[in-house]
Image (cartoon, rainbow, N blue to C red):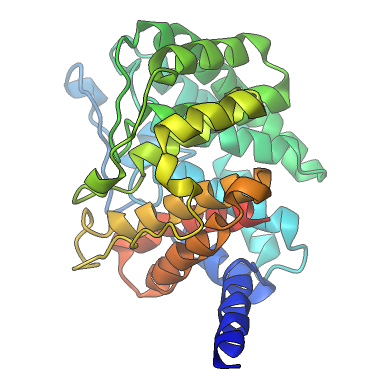
Length: 350
């Protein structure tokens, strides 16, 4: 009887973890909304050709200058669009729409395109920021509201440029970057693949599929025990699984996965969430993001392969619930970006 009751409580807790309520949505929306037009503090990651290029963040990046850095601003915008679309009664709805219209104007996006077209900025935000930009485009494309359609049209020139950059860059990458931070190759491909499928962008799909297979198909026995590194916010093993799950036929993928990650097929498989020692440290707090990234990959596997991997849903919820309270703890180090990671975990849970 005690075992049965415990099981019921655990199932209830995990079900709650996967539920994105209106209350939670309002809380998550408040974080990117607070910083999407906050210019400082700011990490520009700018390469200066000469002194004429010295300028403030809002001048250089009038669309994506808030939330500390360019990529965090981009995925903060994605978060707000996603929440508006899924929660019509979201608090501060009109305020959010107004700020999106201001930031994502055609003029501002043209300035962003001009920045990316600088000869010495071809690698700017490669590929992490590129991936989130394509995810934002997909979210706007699939939002059936007049303002969203206009913003999608405004954003499209930058999306087109970055799609071209993917096609140009991926064949040149002789070796994958298997790291837990921004330059992770597999993560950089995943959202781009989703966009390419959505947009029926055949050339981008072919480039991602061909190069992912070239880089990852022969990998075996990923060293899960080496994760996490001290400041990871992505799981190198799971992000590789994420892109291969997208591009491979189901039977081929399962065969590959059994060679790559045999341990996760065990119903008793467990993995301790990454533990953060200091959430006021902008690098150490990355580990909360790692927990969300593990969650979204485990949820995706459990949904698509419930018979073989359905048990991973509970492990996903374990990671999600560990770090979820931390994104509203008042520390800007995590607040400016973690809401997007938590939201994507919720997205994959359903």
